[in-house]
Amino acid sequence: MRRRKPQEELALTPVRVRAGLAQGRLDSLRAALPGAAAFLKRRRADLLKPDEIADYVALDWLSWEGGGLKLTATGENICAQSQRACSAA
View (cartoon, rainbow, N blue to C red):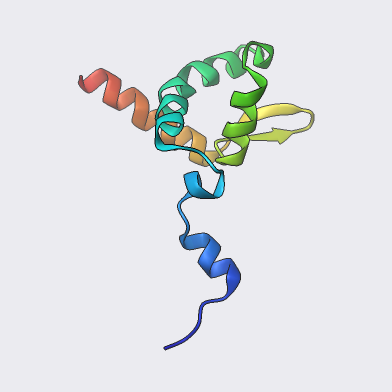
């Protein structure tokens, strides 16, 4: 059996574990992401709490680009999933 390289092990670790987040915190961030995306769209990242920004960046849902925050592809997908779940309920 082949041993995995450290980066392969890291890739198999759930993102929330790598970011050091509890499941409840992850759920609340997921629910709040559409609102955060709306703030970013209006260029109002100042309305986001610093700890939320840090967690979103750690989860790779937001990234810093040119001194501003941007929704990543992963963040866009999570946001779309959240919005579909809200409209289906």
